[in-house]
Length: 292
Ligand code: GUN
Image (cartoon, protein in one colour):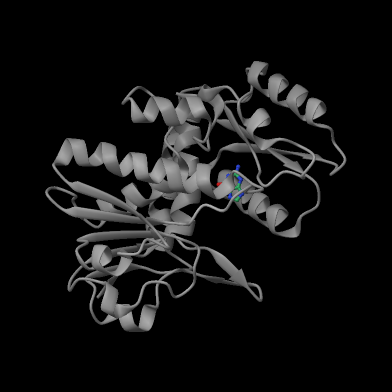
């Protein structure tokens, strides 16, 4: 089994982006500038935001955090979104999710200009991606695509199985369904059109989950159910991409039971150190491209 090392791959991407930013500066061009809007004092969100800001600065992207109180009203937040849309010094921005319960994430996201939506999670960007139009690709699927490409993994003629979460009624945040599930499934479908792959979309609770997974040449699991995928569910030599992210006692857990899967699969992206760092690297790629 080979490890798909997201940490090392993301570091390589960051050094390429740093070179691009230095070249922009050397040509007398403005360097990319990004903003992150953080509402409230959720510790995990603040940590994620700091991580994104640090990643920007490490490649020469200017980054600014707009930190608002948890009491901020939806209309005040939308005013800030509109201001960022109009601000020509900002090339891209994101609104960190989840938002406090009194704010509708859907209504806020739909006001973000798609050209500045570096998360690639607005309806316009997801729709444009599906239609094959110029779009900013969602960062998680882009990170996965990039990770596979850099290890020479092709999708030509393969069976790609994507395992998503079971959708819960009245889901509070659009974070996982919109940031991961839908863009991931649609990107894999698009990829399959180009490369004659077959794409199957399952859910954690699909009754035939085991059978489906056992036929996967490439298995992408984003179910947020630690240990869901066991060794007897994977095909010999398969590529396994673990997108699971469940925090238990401060520790991040993926969806794959690494011990039993490792002896069967060909490649495995670990948690932590696989898709996570690649998502941040893809975000940086999106910012640099939004600037261009
Ligand atoms: N919160 C955790 N991950 C993400 C992400 O990728 N984008 C946004 N906007 N919020 C997040």
